[in-house]
Length: 445
Picture 1: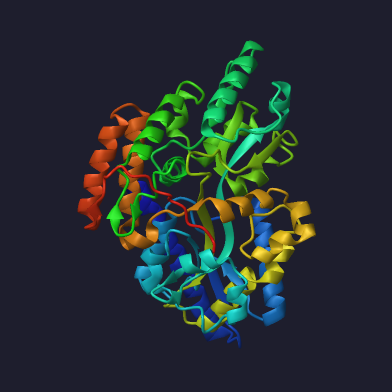
Picture 2 (picture 1 turned 90 degrees about the vertical axis):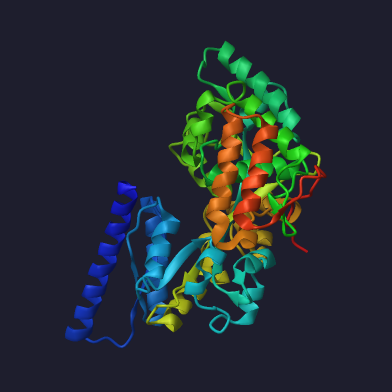
């Protein structure tokens, strides 16, 4: 708690200094156009910061409006954004928000529809626009999209006689077991078949949701009811628990995204579940597996394949003193021209469907085809819209239940039944534990 409060204090102090500096500028040197501030904790590396600074320079050149980046910690993203918005501060003007935040932050964000032409909104994935629309208000414009994918070592598949990555979870278990045994027999004692994100975190919610949705277990809450307690969900939680210590390292129950990636980049895993934007790091010049891997949709279950919807969008604070200029920046960053420019080199998957048919974009980002396949055939959304401000508590209850199964503190059946009760009490929604199968997919029309 002390560390969290310290982080939030640092952000508040940075905002105060920034406001003080701008006040001095207004007194000493009036300017005709404002400076827009933006907070985005998704730029931890120098390359990302350089790429975004280039965008800001282009924006300033075209509009005369300068952009200033507010420093922020990568951790505690939602807590920092909520504190800044709820304080009604005029800075920052623009926020990067996750796909699961719209209903949590909507009351503090402006409706972008009066500022962004309808045809530009229509260019975006309809599902993303729907996700960032709360009570008819478009509170953010998508910037990039991501989904869970399977990363595989194609060199090892060939080495052990496989022509393609596993199509089902059962195939994944068998192939991972064989490759793991073979590599260890050759002296690689730290080699594992499959790494993923098993820590008590939002990432585990995403992983477990993919398991259960692919097998027909639904998406936790559906049609105004808590539906998590069903046979498919119980079955896949128990299956994942068997992975721990067999094809996945015992420590996987503490893995976040970067932990899995580090193991993968070191060449110590045959398969990895991670986000589509991880492709950039996995293919970096310093990566041991560069040129030795491919990506594809996650394995199928009885209901098909499932990849959790992720990504970010830009929103304008309702407390901004310059909403028009801030919306101009959002429109610029999320627009077709800038997304096309970013896609000429490896980048995060874009949010405009038409760009997925552009040959130059696909040449630079061949994995975009897999992202599009998941988006069309097996996208699953977390129940953030159904639970609103209760989503963080809903997700925590869910991943704590799954983690208890993975660490063998509870059986899958007991954990699912207890979670059903907790979620029903938390949300006020009725439980539906008929054990019927659910599709769990959110597909584009």
